[in-house]
Image (cartoon, rainbow, N blue to C red; front, side, top):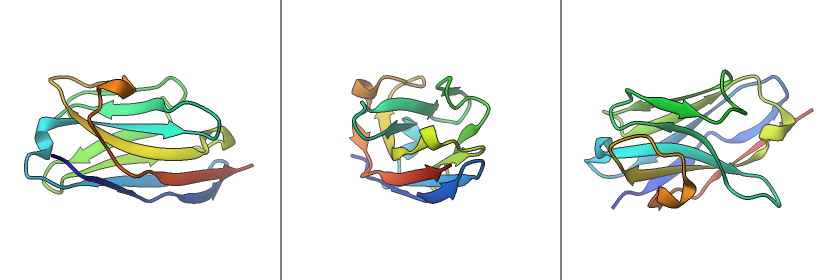
Length: 124
């Protein structure tokens, strides 16, 4: 069982930056693949980024590639999402997720554990 708590959301102007954090409970969090997803009003939840268990591999949605960076601190049991050059279309609730897998996972349905979400609002 893993519990995830996101933080770091807020309101920022276009072109600005935010860093989201996802703190995980459990001593074996480094056994889990982690990912970030987002959901805008009236839209389905969509994949943003994923990172492998030991942070060897990462994968990004095309819409955030080159602007967002996912990372993890294995000692601190925390996953981060650094978001730069933010755009109004990045506005959404951002969710952290985790699952047991030997490789990064992009499909929403394959994640077993989810945080409560944190709001990110980018104004133009």
